[in-house]
Image (cartoon, rainbow, N blue to C red; front, side, top):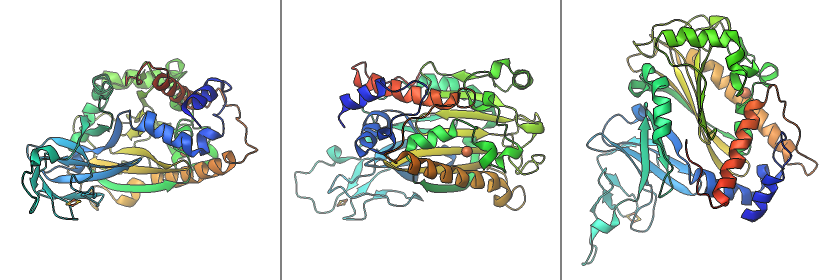
Length: 411
Ligand code: FES
Ligand SMILES: [Fe+2]
């Protein structure tokens, strides 16, 4: 399928209905999504507290690109293509590690943490190591969240940073620690993963653990109605009086949103009882009880929940037309001690179960959508407003990318 065919298929889609089948199965559209979304937009990588010391690094794969994110000697976080400038081997293969230098395992070319080539044995003169440093990638940190962009001229990041920081800063996530991380492969297109995330129409039949504390009200997961709901507006007023920005904030282009929502029965945390925290408070600055969950999304790679005692971030990366990797991290106070202040089981129980339930849902959705008999069905306008909003963002971003108006701005 050529780009113009993809564009005309998007433009002629039925409003309020799912995308046509090809958008969930076609390898050409998968490549198109990589080229126009994942290789252009800012992507969430992980948390800066995961790589606290010089030489600490993490790696990830975005489409065809192996990438490396490392803390340099001066304490700054940098991102590089994880591809040696000799004959191209991947330099770091571990998901995470620490090293005083970045040494390619193939012939031991060695790079400094700032990407400079330091050593290449027995190369004939003339040889200029200055031209053979690791290729850098745009990298930004916002409130402890690390972002990269593969595009040579990345879209603006500052509007997102300015919008996000007041909501996140009180939780001090730059000084938290990742207590647990899970990576699951879902046999579903990345857009199905997002569509499932952006509604809770499916929650009561599928998520018994999450539904103990997380409201399935359309106003919570959707895009409208929250301001008219007195439960929510009272929660915002109480939180904002306590110094916690909470109101609904979405970028003009719909790429990201922040809002702080109440949990059921003034629950403290995502547990079966909902009553007790699973860890000591994330931040000494936040002592207000029952703050609910700060819910954030940033298309196409992050959704996120921040509670009083822990935070959970979810990173979405496509690995094929019908495969997506979701990496979940649970963050707690850096001083919290496992076995004393929290247990991994209590901390992770609800979202480990919920993730697995969502994986199954997405995989069944994918199998059904892949049928030649599938035709786009109607979204539920009450409960699936968030899904419609995601699909509109996707279509508008693609249309902008292809219509010569340049890339979609972050804000
Ligand atoms: S490919 Fe890296 S040192 Fe040869
Ligand atoms: Fe779900």
